[in-house]
Length: 292
Image 1 (cartoon, helix red, strand yellow):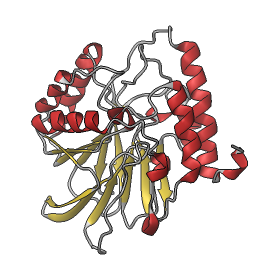
Image 2 (cartoon, helix red, strand yellow; image 1 turned 90 degrees about the horizontal axis):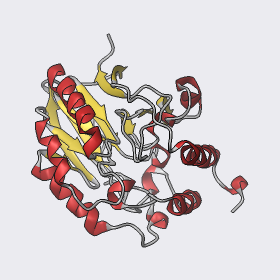
Image 3 (cartoon, rainbow, N blue to C red; image 1 turned 90 degrees about the vertical axis):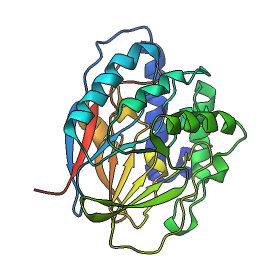
Image 4 (spheres, rainbow, N blue to C red; image 1 turned 180 degrees about the horizontal axis):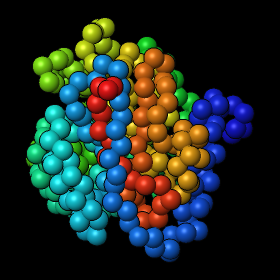
């Protein structure tokens, strides 16, 4: 596959992701003190109430204290909603009992699944294969198609179990679904898009609305210019090994545009699928509010 055949945005993501993967492999035995997430305020025109966004918790025994501290921080902020951008599981474990931690979240909570929740692209060879498949995607809002990513490796039955465990603990999992809510007395539309790397992303076609509209996805480079005010994504861990300014310029974290929408890629909460936590970026809890 020639990199020149890949659209520039995906070309950049392809190259940087392979670089980071090689770096993570070389640093896997190095332990770095885990950092507590900071609160990042994201002001968006038309935003309603106060909405919290986090992603990539990768729940396991040794990061439960950090996740619980994050949950306590969120509860103390008393937001209207919490949104979680996928990758709930760690490694290849079948034990989902630790997902009960989400029952400690007090606000209404919605989520999508990530590639690790489907066990898709979660090995070195799987990662390279997925990055090669990205060039086949059609990411136009009206003809969105991620089925080329469905190479038969996604474990749909496991993803169903993850979703069931989350639902049992108060997290509503959206799999190509839309919910219409009222937040702080104003209309709010939330579109939850299932995982693109698993080939399951198929957002519904919707009528135009005046409601503040958020698309919740996992992989930012599978975003499309939907009719949205805000698109929220995780997956990259904010570049994790790169200084924040570099990661922002590469589109691996922070705020940018996708069509007419704000696209925000979170740095995650300080957890990952690595056996030991290594990061140069500061993890975050994203607080979405109106300007001013």
